[in-house]
Amino acid sequence: MTLKLAQKVAVITGGSTGIGLAMAKRFVKEGATVYLTGRRQAELDMAVGAIDGTVEGVRVDSADPAQLQALFDRIKARHGKLDVLVANAGGGSMLPMGQITEAHFDDTFSRNVKGTLFTVQAALPLLGNGSSVILTGSTAGSSGTEAFSVYAASKAAVRAFARNWILDLKGRGIRINTLSPGPTKTPGLVELVGNDPAQQQGLLDHLASQIPMGRVGDPDEIAKAAVFLASDDASFVNGIELFVDGGIAQI
Image 1 (cartoon, rainbow, N blue to C red):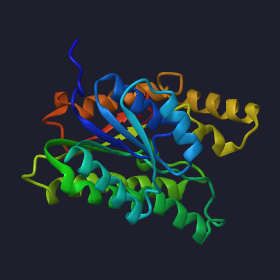
Image 2 (cartoon, rainbow, N blue to C red; image 1 turned 135 degrees about the horizontal axis):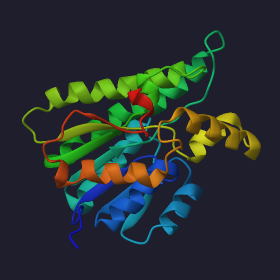
Image 3 (tube, rainbow, N blue to C red; image 1 turned 45 degrees about the horizontal axis):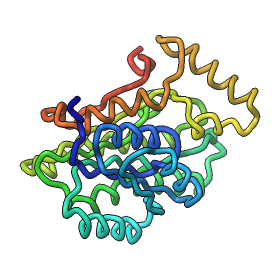
Image 4 (cartoon, rainbow, N blue to C red; image 1 turned 45 degrees about the vertical axis):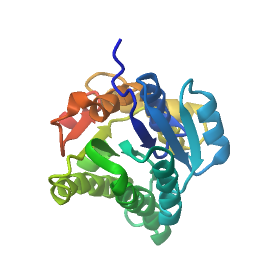
């Protein structure tokens, strides 16, 4: 069996839980050497322990350019290159218009927009011809969701980055694509409504009722799409937004 990511070096930010962790598992299974980042060391250690393969966890706050630079300096010293970058770190919370605070805005845009920008910019010297950059977007960036406007706006900004960066980097052979999951069963999703299991299940059931496929996604389904975008199978795929959403953004 041919491994799709054999001999590739990959970084996945925000990789200690949920979709990022699922991507890391898939990337390693396909032969990549993976560096996972996250802000919490305990979760990073658990993530690395759950992956059988060449993987290392590095504590990094993606909104801190100095920490990002240290990460890519380490990769340069060890490998001299980076083949795949997944700017996945991010998150958000819910507040309706009229209750939005400056702290809420700053936190969301720092994690999702500032972090994505400076992650990709810091990695640029290591990215060469044939490399792949994947930005994690969201269906929220293309539709309306009550009390979720700041998060949605931040993900729309991420989508705009891909459209513009492929022009800035024209001629370098670096592909930049946005991968936009729909509702996916992750800790980050269910914790939007708190820690009560009944409320969490209620959220999942409500979301499933809105999706043409009749269910929410599994993180591994998003990870499989990420493998495609990271691999040479996607060698002429550039600047797209790939929805992995059960159809919810298409109706």
